[in-house]
Image (cartoon, rainbow, N blue to C red):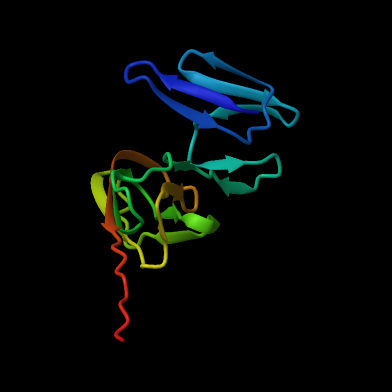
Length: 164
């Protein structure tokens, strides 16, 4: 099932996929979803508990639109800075030319739900004219992203000259 949710005050849209529900409803301030496996309250906790009592971290990911970042030549990313409320480790990935993807995982994330920022430094192996940046949570961690700053490096191709 594909579900879309729009925040009316900021007109921001979220997309949810891989839900095995056939109906969703709001009852007061609580959200319930029904499917072949039963009735579930949505938005309670950071884990998904299956009927067998097994907890699974809820996967959260998003990818920004492919961009040239205002640079009309090939480039590579030096760094991506993520600002917001981040309660666990997260990964930032960059998709480059030829379907190559480089992923960097955060380290030493504060477990408190406070505003802070994390820098993700990338190697020089991911290059291309157009790049895509995305974010994954790790272990079902929660995040609320306020800002994403991308620092690209413009690549200059030098011509080689032969001496005769």
